[in-house]
Image 1 (spheres, rainbow, N blue to C red):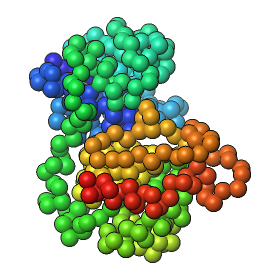
Image 2: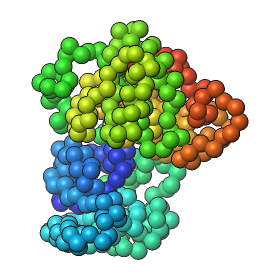
Image 3: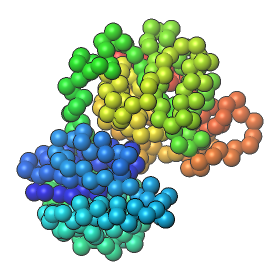
Image 4: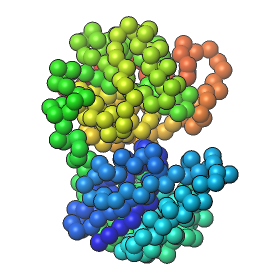
Length: 348
């Protein structure tokens, strides 16, 4: 059975989709997937062995180049690739109008969330079949339910399995040139994210690095954008310890994560990758809620802010009263709390 999966972004949302694919493969061993995804994330679908073809789109870039002469040709080529073959089923696992449009354009029986279940209800009008999935479930379980209803099987009672077996299982710090055995043991700290309000205080990162190095752990910080690089350099300079990683592909970053003794990070995509790889992870949630989209894995712990206005879901903190740290909601998620929590997981 050949399935076209529409799930274009974001990084954490893509990771949340893998358990549903693993469920489907368990129930239907001959099933195969093609995946429509944003061009910046084309590596991600290849991490599951049951994804055969990745079809990139560039909605984010297209929105910023509407007057480009080449845009019409590029979009046309993308649509041609999506319509290249007839699929047994097309599943929109995103529930947005943009994802529903690609579902509508593809050849085959299209399936998605119904009017009351989709994030953008109008998307449901573009599917041939719609299914009800409750909103009060974690994103991983919502997608698992959608797949089970679309493909007519019962969700396995076992915990969610991401199925990220390749290329990570083959490297594992032995043959990988980036991650060497002489670097062990090490920790990866992930301080950068898109919302300023989700940033754990720099002073806390500095103190956490000092704790980690006092226990003979090496600390590495990844980055992607110039702002993330500046943040990492500022933290490491103040700590006078740790190392900034070179900018590299998501696959190479994942190799660093899977070989780490532990990972600490804010609410951002790389932390979801680490959780899916079953690395010991401490996830820090302040203005956002972990209830429906938090990290989900076997060896991880979520630390949620205990603060009157948390989770506020604001990109910029607007708390104006006096506070020891900013954002104020992270005040009680102290470095010692994070370190003690991480140590318990590493021993787990």
